Amino acid sequence: MSNHSIDADIKVKWAEGQSAYSPSTPEELLLIAIDLLVRDRGSDAARTFIDQVFERYAPHDAISVEPGAR
Image (cartoon, rainbow, N blue to C red; front, side, top):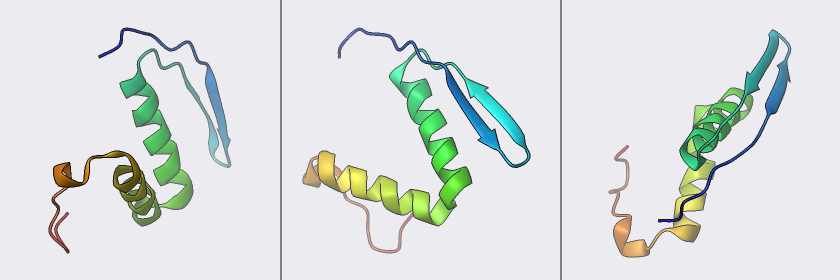
């Protein structure tokens, strides 16, 4: 695992206000990205997108989800 940090200042404007984020790790950045994706596209669309990412980058034998299981 690599050792690095992220220096980011993310500002998001919503109809109901605004949000500000300052992630410092890849994990925090991922959680922010998923949160924004779900808020913008909805949970089903976000899940579909994330499933596509796993299909593309994860080893196929590491993903063994039975159809219909979530």
